[in-house]
Length: 639
Ligand SMILES: *Cc1c(COP(=O)(O)O)cnc(C)c1O
Image 1 (cartoon, rainbow, N blue to C red):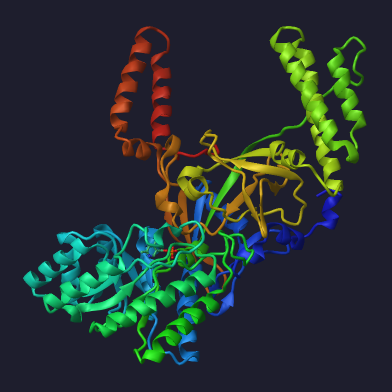
Image 2 (cartoon, helix red, strand yellow):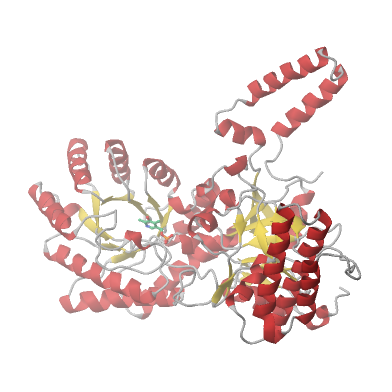
């Protein structure tokens, strides 16, 4: 706290820097004491939970970093917000249909999450969407209310269809959404054999194309769904077996994370016209399923950029209801039940990944001699000259010179013409010049692009205790941006520009793209580490898609998970604690047998004893270390 900058720094400035209030959606904010807090709503009042305190609490219980926190209250509130927003739009516009959301299981299949969604969803009739047999089994065993829908997308075989038909008979609202013409004949056949009336939906490919990351699901060439021509064939096929009365639902899915509300409106209008014509054809219909796509504002910019959205939840609901009414009303078509399959927007907010920093690499000049000896190589004097002459008006020239001289020294070194020590002085001088240039560039208005990039190139690397591939795979796979910020010390000025590296030692295992409201930046400001004190960082809004996509890169397994439920008095319980993978677990995922490995190692140790390399009691100790490691956490553990 003796940094003079801190007098001028405050939580408010940290808030501007990391945008917590912008992306936090009232679920996260920075406290006056400089800590990021979760703000779950409990019995109508927001409670303030410091994430740092949670970490300390977990560590006391033996739960180590990295840890994924799940806030059950936030998930519950988010499902409430979605349903209330639709219900509000429906009531205020006098829409005659209802809203029935379904949560797509693929977005987060974790048992605890689905249990929670099913429980909270029951009071809104919020159901589940299943894309496979396994997911249908999950849905069937969790749905509690007969009001809730189960929507079955994806390819369906006979077994899948039989299961769904039995569910219909039991009273579930279980829809088969037909994705391909082939599927329809199995549905018809099985329902005739079993004598059960199916609830049939049709997934249609719309011509409307949306912008954003995941737009491959829209347009003529999208992989899933029926073309308009195939849809007409489907109607005819159903008519032919006198089953058109089973066609009740129209489904479309434009893609995930749709940033622009105009695209959503466009899709709904097109779908409404399909819907109307299906009614004209004589299908009873009654349900219009808009799929997913409701976006999360990951960068807090509230714009139509890919990591954001240019609409609020209320606008989304109002627009959907408005478009449906204004398209169907002139034709006198009754208002359908509106179904949406929002996954991302439902679950993203409730999870936070927390990790600690293990080490830092800085790109700063080491110590230099007080004065450069006359006898030193001429290039060293040239570098020294470049350092002294650097000014705001000659930044580019100075940069060019420094790079040239340094490269010359490196060349000469390769030819054995300068010594290791001379090269070391050159490298240090070079770094010193670069840092001076960055400082000068901060003060000047127009900065050449090469120098703009220098900041990123000289940024510290903060080595952090997590695996990107396991816990934040979308950063690697699709350049997704998540809000990332330290969870404490936010009333101190962060003085380091950094990039984040995970512990997989893979050059892809890094984060060097951060949200900064209206632009992305290549470095993240963080605090200088303090001797003997942990530094904790949070990656936020990570509840959607990250957990199950993760792979075992370098055999780092699932992190520890803690679910938090807050009580009325502000105290909290760890409703669920799931220990992350042990090393033995991840080894068995790739078909090793930890028992056999132990046995092999034991034999090798025995041989070493026989040869006299180690003593019998040393063997005992080594074997114990081997066994302990097998049952240890795959991440870096503190002693
Ligand atoms: C992935 C998917 C969803 C979920 O989309 P979000 O954008 O996460 O809401 C919904 N429906 C279908 C058919 C999907 O494939």
